[in-house]
Image (cartoon, helix red, strand yellow):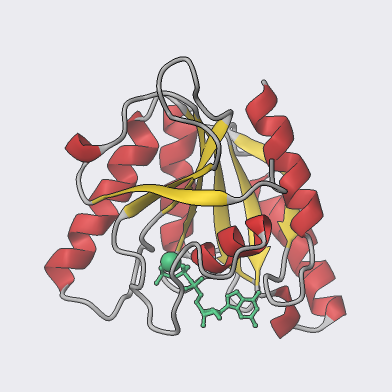
Amino acid sequence: LFRREWIFLRGVAAMKFLPPEGPHEVAFAGRSNVGKSSLINALVRQKGLARMSNTPGRTQELNFFIPSGYSGEAEDLPPFALVDMPGYGFAQAPKAQVEAWTKLVFDYLRGRVTLKRVYVLIDSRHGIKRIDEEVMDLLDKAAVSYQVVLTKADKIKAPALKKLVEDTAQKISRRPAAFPGVIATSSEKGWGLDELRMAITTAVEY
Ligand code: GTP
Ligand code: MG
């Protein structure tokens, strides 16, 4: 499916606009600017699919993407959708707006029946922060399966990356809903993408 063309289905700014629950959903969560939109584009090999930017706060809605060739009608649903999300934490946008996005993201993560797997993205230069812990607490509580992905691995040296992968795996090892294994990626260099595609494919098959 990652060889198919992917298309933008819908962007939603509030829970009431969510598409009807249908295909499994795989969502990408993380602090602003961590590289969520870039990673989705790299996975499907389409640079312009999800909008990316240098400015934290680029993605402002929950954006749903599906492979092309499905009508979306009940009898013709795609096997799964990819969901890009606004970042949490700092963003170059009014405080009230950032709070609204964060609430939308948290509500979606907590309450979406068809949400099959969340990828929690962590910037390789920064490691797990307090807000990431809060998101993982929420996912553990809601029993939503998630896996940690390190982004921008090209920004740190190989030994530091190796240590970060080990330390991060150790940090999440006691978390009940965390899928074991930390995937180091670089959207820029293409690192870790095949591993992540396989993990997603496996996650949605169950
Ligand atoms: P928001 O939507 O604002 O929350 O950001 P985001 O998490 O979607 O990040 P986005 O994909 O827009 O990327 C943010 C910046 O990081 C852009 O300038 C990207 O070019 C850069 N970036 C993303 N992935 C990588 C990577 O693997 N390596 C490097 N070096 N830069 C990256
Ligand atoms: Mg984005």
